[in-house]
Image 1 (cartoon, one colour):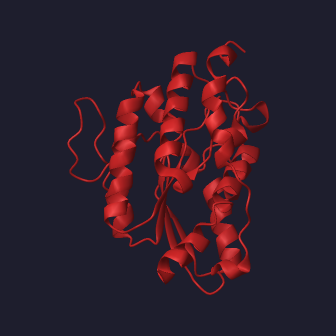
Image 2 (tube, rainbow, N blue to C red):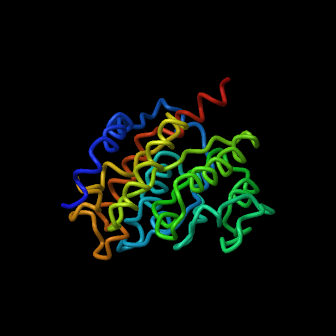
Amino acid sequence: MRYITILPVLFLFLTASSGQTTLKPDSGLVTHSFRIVVIGSSTAAGVGANPPDSAWVNRYRAYLQGINPSTEVINLAKGGYQTCHLMPSGSILPAGRPQPDTLRNITKALSLHPDAIILNLPSNDAAAGYKAAEQLANFDTIIQTATRSGVPIWVCTPQPRHFSSNKIVTQLIVCKAISEKYGSRVINFWDPISAPNGLILMACNSGDGIHVNNSGHRRLFEQVRNKNIPAELVKLARK
């Protein structure tokens, strides 16, 4: 537990962002269908879930379609992806960074005319050595690209991973900054699956220290469900 002494203060901010609510039929989902596009990396792609319908995106799709079968959840996520992969097409990135994937990035997501976008990038930037400032600048570019297009975007926080202490601190700095800047549009993917030392909870670890198992995916699904994205979309449509 060598990380405990450097982490507790950074953990405190997350507890306020995990409020539990549930979607009610009067939220509008029964009478409104939506298209939600997910962009991200391996967690959103479903790695660690077995069978695939246990993955958080697939659980979320089944949940929404159980209320309104016309609602779509389109998943563009791919394992290994970093913020650079999801940057707008045509972005000029630093030397040595991957280029945007025009089949899976924010530009592609917007081309599908979604009602909402969910961005889920757990830890690959930190693993590749990105500093917090670079990660946050890329997150902001992706999010502002959606916002300028009039599409609401929800951003998931980073997730715990079996990192060294310095990278865990980087992850928590990014979590804190995202939570403070994007407020109600942040989905807390840290607290439900994190041990006190900043690693993945044993009960949620798929075995590799990187990805979550079925239990972890279920917890992440619950965090997304509890955001009541369809209800928010109905409110926005009525304005």
